[in-house]
Image 1 (cartoon, rainbow, N blue to C red):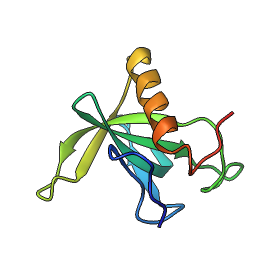
Image 2: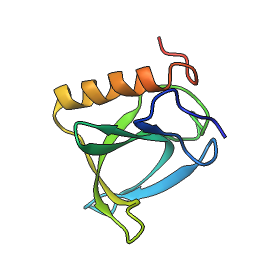
Image 3: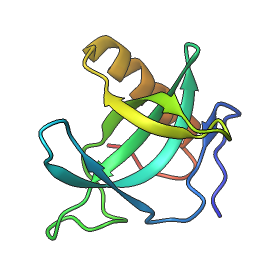
Image 4: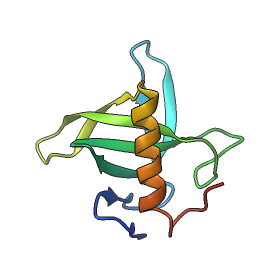
Length: 106
């Protein structure tokens, strides 16, 4: 298992872990979980959209989702898209810093 270089980052338990999400309209999306980041008192999941053209373990743009509900073990159970571009950019910058030894960024 990979380890992040930052105490505010929790990497996935296995590489290529995908999660199926369903939006409020019922549309399904498969996202690869890249890790959970603690930032500004909130928890954010960093995800990569998976498709036939871009399977898990590929590279490309990521999606930042805020954990908004938690289960009895305090694990995220529901996420919402971060719509504030400033917050999303801060979280992405923190993700880049935390994972600089794991991923290559352009």
